[in-house]
Amino acid sequence: MGLKFSKQSHGRADNMNLAHTHQQVIHCLITNFFVRNLVSKKRRRLLVGGYDLDMSYITDRVLAMSFPAERMRAVYRNPLWQVKSVLDMRHQGHYKAGKGRTGLMVCTYLVYIGLSAEEALQLYAQKRTTNNEGVSIPSQRRYVGYWANTLLFPKGAGAGPPGVNLPHPCSRELRRIRLYDTITTESIFFVISELQEVTGDVRVIFYQKMKGGRLFYACFNTAFIRNSLLQALNGFTSFATWSLQFSLRDLDKVASKGRSICGNAFCLELLFGPANTKCSLLPPSDDDLSDDSF
Image (tube, rainbow, N blue to C red; front, top):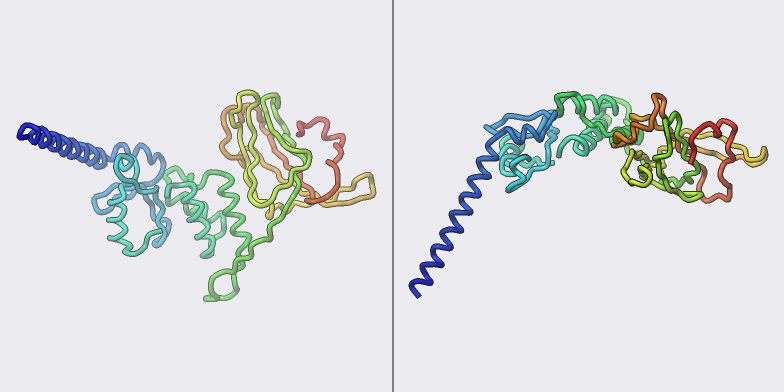
């Protein structure tokens, strides 16, 4: 029994020593700022209370940061206990990550308190990054503009917060997809039914044919499609159509393969018609014959 007890004691001691060594290694890596500075790239960092954290003050009351982490992830992200210490030190009871999605939320708040969409995006870029590239994904920037268009600011000083006038959900039929100034369309793969009804938030994704790699995509909300045209079918029936156009810089996550098919004047156009109609696809015009259409 004594021998067995001795072996168990040694085993527990070894485990405790291993756990202690593991904690020491993590602590050593956390206190080494090199890894976290490498991961944060162009985001500004804040030195406060002896900590070096991936966070930036956008205003006196708005703080942007990457999501805090524990254990091994704290080696390259903000350690949770350090973030808590700083917030308790500077903003006790104020807890409200990153650059893109964080920037989207911060910018919508800045717009709500009176900045224009462009002013909010620019302020965030200046305060959060060292290369002046804050919210860089086009769709995220687009949705900041959507939010700005829903706000109604009362007139007069001290008139209170703005009202929010959300548009009604709106269905559209995606009738045509056209690509202008393309070098080649042989590598593009896109699937759509003859009349595709879409509502609300929509993502249109283009893939590389056969290989399946994503080329680029575009995100939008159908309630904010405003460019309307009046079309005539056979000279008798008239109905409204809506057009959305995207340049290369308006598309998200454009891969190198995506850039390789685009000319200098590349444009993606989505043509919509009213939902729940019996109208067929719009007949192609003479100009359509020289363009790449789907």
